[in-house]
Length: 149
Length: 212
Length: 106
Image 1 (cartoon, chains in turn cyan, blue, green):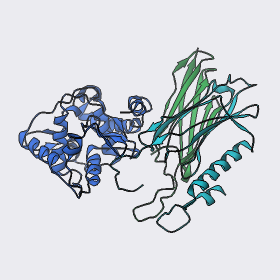
Image 2 (cartoon, rainbow over the protein chains, first blue to last red):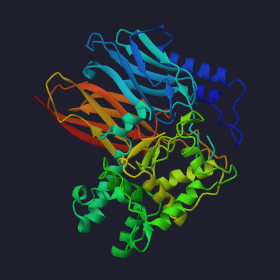
Image 3 (cartoon, chains in turn cyan, purple, blue):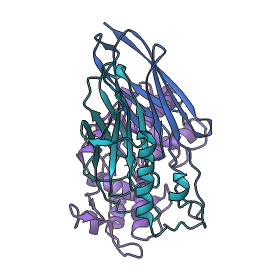
Image 4 (cartoon, rainbow over the protein chains, first blue to last red):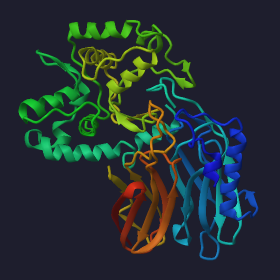
C-alpha cells in the first residue's frame, strides 16, 4: 500500500528518511490521484486554489478551493480533493459536495510540511477532473520549542 | 503580521482561540460570577493593568486568579498552562481587548525585569534586547523579529497549535538561546512580564492574539 | 476536548447561498511525531465531518493528518427552508461530537 512504501515509520526508533524520498513522495501523490480519478485525465482549469505563496508557519495554513460551476443537478462539482507532495502522506482533505452546495467552495486550515506542490482536484458530475496547483514556500519558525521537528 | 494570521486573529466567531474563550466563560459562570458578577462590565480593563504590584507582591493575572482560588475559594490552584487556567485567563483578557495597556510603576520590580531583559543568557550568550531592541524588523530563520510587546497574551501560537501564556513563550526564547528556562511562576518571569508589559504601555491589548 | 463551534446565519432568504463555518477543538495528532525518546506518538485525528440540513446530507469531508489542529472547515449551502442543520464530527479512538444550528428561511 502507498503508506507502507512511502512511510518512514516501520524502522528503528530514530527516523531516517530514505535516500530516494523525493521519488517516493512523488509516487505516493500520483497513486492517490490515480485512486480518485481512476486514471482519467486531470486538466488544469476551472479550479482556483487559494493558498498564501509564502507561509509563515506550516502548522496552520488557511487554504480555500473554489471551482467554477453553476452547481445545478445536471452540472455540479461532486467532490474537491486536496493533496500535497511534500507531507509525510499526500492526502489533505476530500470534500463531498452536490447541487445543494450552491457554490463549489471549501476552506480548511492545513499543515504543509515543506516547500512543494499543493494540488486541488475537482471531480465533476460529468466524470471530468479539473485541477489547480501551487508551490507555496514554507519557512520555519525561528525559536523552536524543543528543538525537534 | 501576515494577512492570513491577522484574519485568524480577527475571526471572532471561529478563530482558534474561541474554543478556550467558551471554556473560560463556562468556568467564569461556575466559579467567579458569585463575587465578580457580570464579566463584561466587571472585568473590563482588568487584564490591561496586569502584572501589578498590590503593595505586598507583584502578580500577573494567572497568579491573581490562583490567589482568588486558594485564599478566597479554598480550592487548589490551577496549574500553569492547564486548560482551565488558560481558558480563564484568555476569557478575562478578552474583556479588555482594544483597551490601552496601563501598567502602574513599581520601580524595584521594573528594574529587576529590565535587568533580565538586558542580561545576556544561555550558551548563545544573547540578551532579549539584542534581538528585540537592536534587531527588530530584521529576519531570523525566515521570520520577522518583533519588538516583543506582549499585547495579545494568552496567544494561539501556530507553532504550538495551542493556546499558551507569555511565560510559555518566554521559555521558548530561553531554550532558543540555549539557556535553562526559569520555572513557571518564578519571580524572574513575573518581573520580566511586568517589564515587557510596562514597555508596551499605551498599546492596545489584542487578547487573544494569533502568532506564528 | 469535544468543544465544537458552528457559525450559521440565523436567517436567510430562500435560495440564498449561505456560508457555514465549523470549528472543532482537537489536537489532530498526525501519527508522524516522535517523543523526545524517539517513540512514535500514535495518530489521533478527526476523520470525518458530516452536515445534514433537515435530515438530508448536504456536505461531508474526509480529513487526514494534514489538516491542522483545531480544524476549521468552511463550506456553503443553499438556504432552502427553515429548520435545523446538524453537524457531526467522527474520529479515531471513538471520537464523536455533534452540534446543531437553527436557521429561519424567509
